[in-house]
Amino acid sequence: MQRWGSEPACPRCGALDVYKMESATEEGRANFRWRCRACKRMYTIRTGTVMEESRLPLRAWCFTLWSACASKKGVSALQISRECEISYKSALFLMKRVRFAMATDHDSPPKLSGTVEVDETYVGGRPRFPRKRGTIGGPSKVSKKEVVFAMVERGGNARAMHLPGLKGARLKDRIRANVDPTARIMTDESQPYRGIGKSFDGGHHTVNHRLHEYARGDVTTNTIEGFFSLLKRGIIGTFHHVSAEHLHRYVAEFEFRYNARKISDGERVALLVRQSEGKRLTYDDATSHLGSL
Image 1: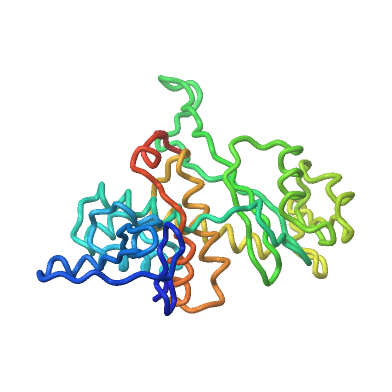
Image 2: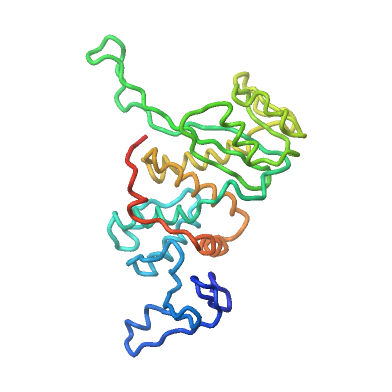
């Protein structure tokens, strides 16, 4: 119902002339198979979505979709493993596919408009055992932090992404690609944003955090700071450890929940089910990167 509405269409050819296959056995009826009279092919509600070719029971998928949408700061693969009674390896791949379904295309319209706050934050760990200079072994190596860049429309949606390396020209290109030219841009005093106001009718307005200035009238970046606080609380409190190569998946998860914050949990799950259509993440693609923050 959430995927097709009242008319279950064929996910391969789009035909509506389909019928539900019946079976004499209970196991066959549990598969919920359909057949298309146009292309003569068989399919299920999983076909053409991130759930395709999954051997996990549908109840595990339903519980995971609900948990990922209803938990404000996310749900860990270990929690899914315990609740669904599946292996951690299966739960980890399951969550990767759910996050893949949550990801949106930043190049698609509509662009952010009105007052848009722009900022970046750094995600990563600190040395567990820092050494002082002059001690055996010398100073410990500082962990490299990763850049998460985001734009938030006040009262509207956010667009966030993992950007390895921070360069002014690259950030400005991202802003121009995702924000309508009529918008007002709000940032802090960081050097990479200088000159961006020339591309927008509303200009570029800044607050100086170094001087402990956090608001000047309606000029502030508090909205985007709130978005980053959800991301960091989720990473620290729920996931604890996030690999650099998969950081973009976690960022997409928090972006999805933020953009759907004004609807109920059930509506958010239905939105994710519809958004998962046409997406596929294989096990090789999900595990092809290794690394850690």
